[in-house]
Structures are given as C-alpha cells and as structure tokens.
Length: 397
Image 1: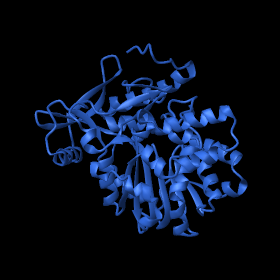
Image 2: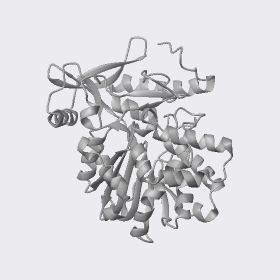
Image 3: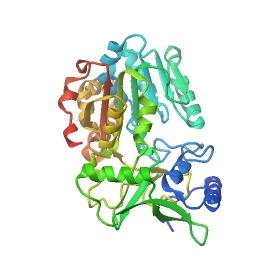
Image 4: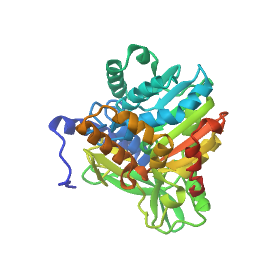
C-alpha cells in the first residue's frame, strides 16, 4: 500500500522496522494467526523494537503526537491546583505515582507547581516500562529540576504492591493498552487476528472469539440494550478490570486521575462507528493503516470511559468526577494559573501561552475530545474543587 501523504522513514528507521516485521512474521509462521492485541502489543512494546521501547522520539514537534503535558506548563499547573489540597490532607507520607511519563515534561512542571504550593509528595514515582524513555526522563529532569526536587523522583518497573497513599496519575496511557478487536457476524462473536498473505505481508482475518472476549462483547450488548448489527467491528479491553486492580489495588487512601480521549459507552459503540476507533499516528498524521512500518508509528484506540468507571469501582475506588478536559481545567483554576503564567511575558510569550491554552480548551482540539476521570478512596470530597464536582457528567456513562 502506498502512502503518498505520509513522510517516508529514513534508511535506518526502515531497517529497524524490518527487524520487528521479521520477528512478527516468524511468530505468525510458527504459531498461526496472531490476535490483534498481541500484534499491537509487540508493535508498541517489543523489547528494543517496539514503538515505545526503541529510540525514536515520540512526543512533541519532533515526534508523532503532542500530549497536553507536552504543550507547556499549563496542564500540569492546573492538575497541581486541583489536587494540592488533597495531597496536603493526605499528609507527609503521600506519594505521587505517574504511569508512563512521556518526555518527563509533566513531572517537571507538576513538581515545580506543587513546590510553589508547599504540597510536595514524599516521593514522585514514575512507572515507565521503556528503558529508553526512562533514560530521557532522567536526563531531562536532572537538568531542569533543583536537586532537592530531583531527589524525590524514583523510577519503578511495576506498580506498588504494598499499601500506599497519595495520587495515581495517567495521561494518555489507556489509549495505548493493546486492544482486542472483535466483529459480530450471524450473531456470533469473532476476534480479529493478523495473518500472512501470499507475499509475506500482514492481513486481517477473523476467528471465533474465546470465552473471555465473547463474554465481554455480550456484556457490552446488555449494557447498550441491543445487539450489535451484523458486520459491526470495534475494539474493547477485556483486561481493563485486571489492569486497574494491578495499578490501583494497593492505593489505600488517595486519588486516581485518568486523562485520555474517548467516549462514554453509548457514544463509543454508535451504529455509525462500525469499524471502531483504532488508528495510527506517524509524524503528526493520523491514518488507518496499522501495518505501516511496524515499530515506527503509534497505534491507539479511544477509551471506553464507562468501562473505566466499572473497572475503578471493581478495584474498590469511588468515582468522584467525570468531566471533559476543558471543564476540568476551568474547575482546576485555569484563570488563575493563566494569570500567574502570563506575568512578565513579552508579546511572543503571551501569544505562545494563548496557543497552548487554545489547544487544551477548544472543543475541536482537546477540550471536549479528552476527558478526565477522577476516583477517590478514603478521601473526603471536600478536598476536591467544588467546581469540579459540579461539572461532573457521570450521568452520560
């Protein structure tokens, strides 16, 4: 397939992708068609070869996409404004755990903002599975943070297993969890697999779904109050409850904040969205070919926030708020954060700040496409901004 609208990788990048393609072909040739979630997992996380495990730059203007945290300090400062009272209430032993960490920009801006509010966590834990990203984060934060703040950082390889208190934070993490693709035909549930065509290329094939995937699809149909139409295809995360228990199960007291793009279930599985939400990002271009140079592009699917709410409750968390990102930032004190950030800026700086806020707030950008879901455990709602609780849209779930 030709991609005339996509920039072509250089020779080294193509060679890197070829090594991952060879591995995938070998696995499929030896074991038969591979479930799409396994294919996606290897494309993103195969050691040394996957998109998030290798050396190419992912975030920012030089990468493939830009997160809210990468735009500038406003996003992190608003999160700090919203959650600092809860950190203070949690006391001296409170930790902050960030899942993933991107370039380290969020940790940098958040720690500086919390320091200004005298609300620093005892430790800032970063769960980052990619050794390459860990090294970049450490280099950036060592260079940009005062030594006393950098000393609070600690990189971990798995979620805490012992009880802890504090804040769990994940920004654009859920959309990168390997998604199971399903299809419904003749009333039966099928799971999408990746096979090899006659030329050794990748192709999609459907196989009868296993019990876990079938049960997850039937749960969706019951929740929606209707069966999927014949030929309907989409994705889901049957592993979501187990993942949530793994990352949040040991949180004894505190908050868990997830920010991502997605929909409530009734909007996710609309009849007109009959091929799901799976897409690829390469050099700031979104496209549909998930087989384009594996290992060089991001693969992602939108988040079913109803499923996330169910998983949180299943892990013993209480849903505190579900709001669009724009509403979250306003409730978190965006006006005051903007005023503080604008102090002393020249015209160019003010323009850049305005552009950053537009990207975060405009409905067609991140303001309505992204949502924040906040859970609590053993923490009074009074510690949260009243405006945030008033803006809650959980009725849409």
